[in-house]
Image 1 (tube, rainbow, N blue to C red):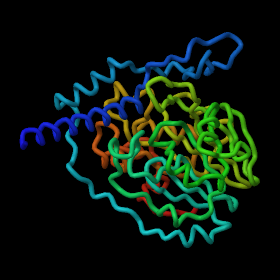
Image 2 (image 1 turned 30 degrees about the vertical axis):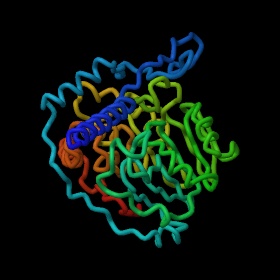
Image 3 (image 1 turned 45 degrees about the vertical axis):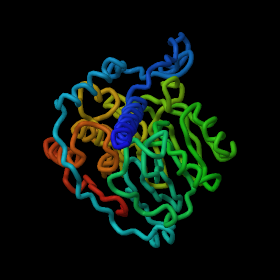
Image 4 (image 1 turned 90 degrees about the horizontal axis):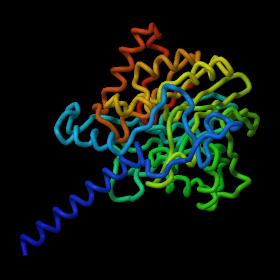
Length: 360
């Protein structure tokens, strides 16, 4: 009986490991479906059955590349990580955020989720309050620090912007909780997924790169990124990915979502900058040979900040889910060093803890 229990336990452990690896595979490869070829006359990023990154800075990663990464990890070639981290949140009961109707604020909830308040409009970026970023609730990348503020402490959310459909950026339980109380801005072909959750079409605005729409006095522009999409093994790049430019009466915000470093940062900065705040990712960048097409490292994020001609840099996409090979507390240290080398003033880098609100 003991041997049977031990065998079953090991089988369960192997199954959990396989599902966790599969989740990482979907987040970073998920390549089985191919979206076809480009046809003349179409925008450069549109293919027969999906989308692509049209810049020479982009390249695809294969299943063989993914397996090389995983084998390197198994062989101990990845950097050693701490067994635990001392990440903490800032207590935030949401009182100020619920009452605020005039100040422009940013609150880092965790990972790529921020609450932005501008011109009296409350905006969530890539909201995820779930414990795990995974297609199943019982395994996969797990939070090392809880989201803050708690979901129930949020002000009424007017607008949600989604950058792409990976599980750490598009969270089904969170969208279900938000429901039809908010309006959703999403990239091309994501509206169908939202409608499947009961979100009414009148509450969805679906845009292509460089398209724009107005909502409650704000101009919302769908701007490019260099990334990819997919929630399974057969839907790679069938849904577009993007960043978001939010233009208020006097202030301008930029939210990057996920991205590799690409020429689009300069173009966005020229078209819509200078920005008051740029919310940019700095984590999940190692190993560089594998991650560089889709995830900036901190020096590249600092250069993107300069390209965008922004005043304040809010770093995201670190310290929440362990998705890559770098220690989770390394990105902000790397960023500060890079900012110093680029002569970016320290006061321009807002290293925030989950739950922290700053006004600008």
